[in-house]
Amino acid sequence: MVRSCLSLAMTFALLFPAAGFAAKRDAAPPPPALRDLIACRNEMDGTRRLACFDRASAALQEAVATEAVAVVDQKEVRATREALFGLPTPRDVSLIGAGVSQIESVVREATVNSDGAVVVTLESGQIWAQVDGRGMRTPRRGEKVTIRRATLGRLEAVFEGGTTRQFRRIQ
Image 1 (tube, rainbow, N blue to C red):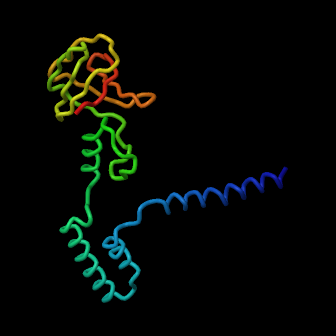
Image 2 (image 1 turned 30 degrees about the horizontal axis):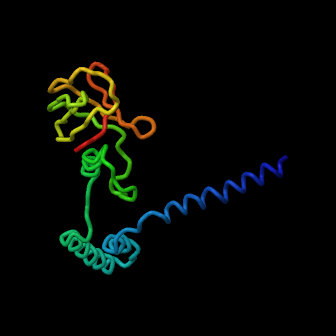
């Protein structure tokens, strides 16, 4: 019993660090300009270290200026994710990721199309159309709405008062 527990513990110790290492290996390496800047931290001599940082920071600044490297903060990433929420995107776009599970907005305009489905334009300009065919009142201008991911890849709009219907983004 002790031997099998020890064997199991050793198996976990060997597998889990390897899995963590493999995940890190699959991540895209930093661009050369950033990698060179990071490498300057390894320089022990103060004069050479400063010269390295000066050289590498100038190269990084040039890379940003020529758009070889893009620098974005979390606020910009979040705004991009929200702007693309509900639209089909390539799976390999690592900048966008799957970080947004819902957006909250306000109805700018709502109409009913010829099929009887509600079409909602949000403050952001996004246009969403009802797809579940269930009747609902037309949302009012200024009404709060949360659009969220639901089961099986569906998207639901939850309006003030709790009305929840399936929607898809059309623009």
